[in-house]
Image (cartoon, rainbow, N blue to C red; front, side):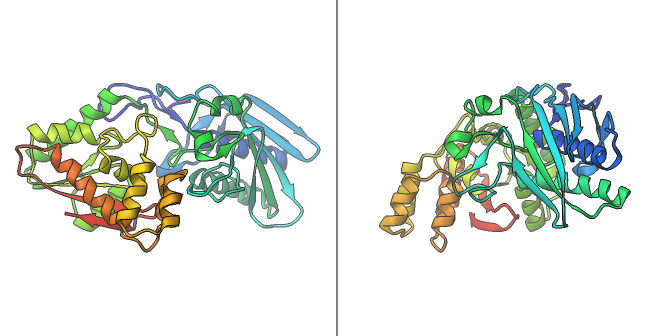
Length: 364
């Protein structure tokens, strides 16, 4: 299902794949079209962010008793994804009145039980971006057939509960199964060496162009904030991802006058605690140390204790609204970054960004 010719940024010819969110959107779109027309489109074409419109073959179909069900096998490309090969199933039922799309978690899809995630407790673990993706594709089908009814979409992944036990979902309070994830719908193959290689090449390009200021961002939102704030050209923006160490070590030998590091609270907190690999599977937030930082920021005994027992860094940040906690994290992240650039005169500043692209704190 991956598009031919897709590769990672370093040109290592790793095949890209599709997220669970894209597969869920494809299955739901096929099921809804069958509900209205009596026929399943196979393969089914959907629209993804950034203009992609891939085709997905259907692995199963069923239409009876006013409910249509379709399934898509997830192809994660060359990414070592634990969900590669799972069946993502969507069942669609029309509701008697309007009201948009209602999402439900079927077997193998988790339920959010704790605060600190993009969805409130009680919601199925279907992230906001996949919900948008599904809703927009269903709206296209509805417009084509003139349907104005509300819809109930139930997503399930056979065996998802067992797979989820090997992920961080239980620790995050997502119980009963996997999460439906994916911002763009596309899985970029995870390759440490290839990604770090692309960071190195980005530094080389920026230096060759004579840029005095470069920025490494952990994700798309923080990168857009950096670009908007500093008006940097695309060539000065480095797709750092989780590899802060890979960027800092290379800049130590190939310095530039100024470096900005930007990311969300949790990622920058890991850097502030001395982690140079910010990936969730390879580094964890030290909540004991975070509680000490809450205390330093003037937190109450209740806030300090809550931070020590917290589920996510985002939960702590929300609980400590009004405290200069983000500023303390930015300060410590800058200190760690500077410590890994010995012998250079690189001016370092840190930018903490929220999920909407707002600036939480700056240091340097």
